[in-house]
Length: 203
Image (tube, rainbow, N blue to C red):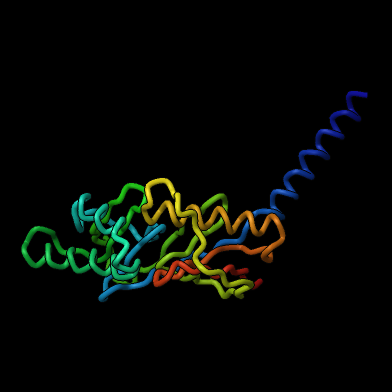
């Protein structure tokens, strides 16, 4: 009896592992966008080794940009890059190669890569297991299975950008569960208008 029970347990565990593997979404490394020649890592971390050299803008400036409804998302990030360049010109910031922007904590950090070259490769953030490409594109080839307009709650927690993105992704995942959109591997968010492309990676 005990032998049969052990076999039964092993079958359940094995089945669970197979189901998990089947349900796990595919992911690809990303290549981040450049703004005014500066690679910008948003919801992504550089693959290459780097060191932080200072703040691109103050925390207060980041929050002010975050809640400004007049300026578009892309222009907000362009303002951050321009501010970092001004700080560098004034000698308030060391030479930097890229900006790493932490939306959760409203921080923009200037970084210097340890080795020269093309250091635009990144690992993207996942939301509820879904890879999110924002100011970046996947390295792997992919197919777009759905295009969605920006759809987020007007009551998003603090009305900051990260709250809108999280609200939007939450709604998109629910649409997939309810069969309103095709199953997808990842989401690409357009920084111009926060519209989404739902994608699957080619085999």
